[in-house]
Length: 267
Image 1: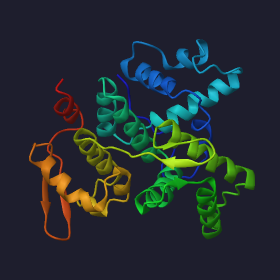
Image 2 (image 1 turned 90 degrees about the horizontal axis):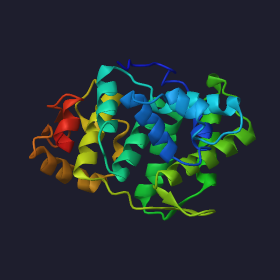
Image 3 (image 1 turned 90 degrees about the vertical axis):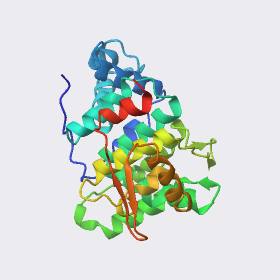
Image 4 (image 1 turned 45 degrees about the horizontal axis):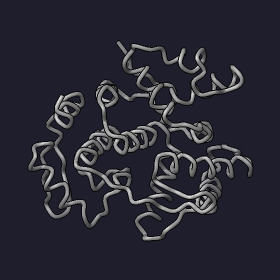
């Protein structure tokens, strides 16, 4: 049985983005996760022995192994583990898998989450066509200047690398496209994926049913104008119960974290 893990403190800031952003083929990340979840293969053997990530040194392989564990195999509780395992034991279509990977990394890594909520989605919803390294660099420099008590002491090179690698991640997840100029792709969120997002959002904030107060709501990629109507339609399919009083939009999850995978994918 796979147990929950606490490989890092999700409240800490770290530079795991740099390692994940340096992975060339994200298909190998899916393979590693599937090996871990299915237990039919060895996650360690895939990376360390068979070297499916095509890394030259053992040190590089260990670094990738640790980064994947921290970014994607790091679970808050049994509900989180049930949801993640349930999804990766099924043939979820690739756009959905990309969103799942994005939401999982957002839960496990505070820096990735905050760049995504404070930079990526704000510019995405603003209607601007592109996102630049300068946008992220400016945010990180302001963040450091306002949070000197954290003693992060990131160099100029570290900041530039974080900005570049973040853009790499979002490009490999098919949220951005282009080489030098990164332009936004339209991110389509299906009914199933929007329902899954509600479960990830509840994991992030288990104290409140009001989705409008959830910090990661922008990561649903559903505009505020469309959100209420889409959630109302989905609630009629018995994926969850919804109550809107004009101020609070409360979502009651009526399925277990394991059960919702069966409901959405009919298995």
